[in-house]
Image 1 (cartoon, rainbow, N blue to C red):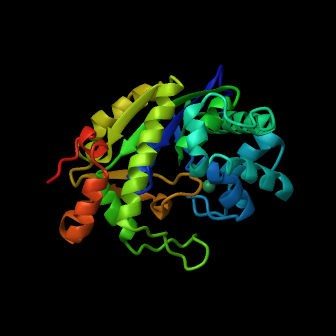
Image 2 (tube, rainbow, N blue to C red):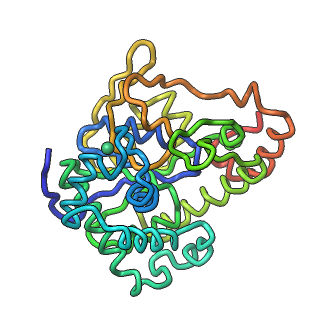
Image 3 (cartoon, protein in one colour):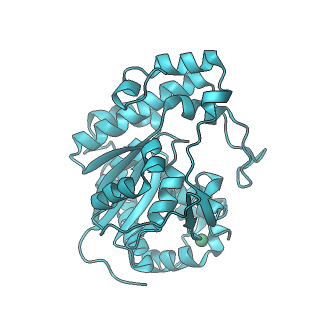
Length: 314
Ligand SMILES: [Zn+2]
């Protein structure tokens, strides 16, 4: 499978606010020949190298064969702890609280010169992923709009943005659920958030993603989680077009299931650990289980962006 990429490495950046279906989208995209889904690379240093959380293949990341080959190719071996800490600290500069400055000048983030070593490391990392996997384009589901600006500074990358959105009421409902995450530190639960905060984040995060992509002139496609479920073939074709790889059918069984193979994704929703059949079924539990006050609050806070994305008041 190994093949050295010629020219800039296409990176298909899966952007969007958490619990919008990006894990499912990435697992489906990983099925397309020419694409490899590697999870949330922004967290590779912290959760992967330093904390040694599990890769989606089930192996602790420092022992995963795929990542071992990538580190060997990029850096001659696994980065030592001090280097990983420096890389993690640099990654943390591309967080939400730095967004206002990055939104104003996405092409020239602060400390561009001081972080040159970091951008060059990222360039080497993504190239090594392409070489080891043999893929033509890398799917990175880091999702942070701010991290896009780091990729833009990294040499040898050709960044394209696939922006997934989902009805904010469904997203807010999901952030309220008690969910188990075997890899989460502490109480092994996924974090929860009040619907009012989810609604604010949903609006700001999605707007920032659009704005950074537009101001940087990046190839951009927005797609809805609901359309991915209703028409997986058509939606995936549009995304693979954006990634510059030939369209390929991802077979869906009569029962509406897709077979998802074992992947090597870093961080993200625990669903990434599941290999085998996955049901393409719309998760609309919020329409039955969401308290009315939460539904109205989320609906009101997310206007007008929600309307622009085609989510009605119901
Ligand atoms: Zn792995």
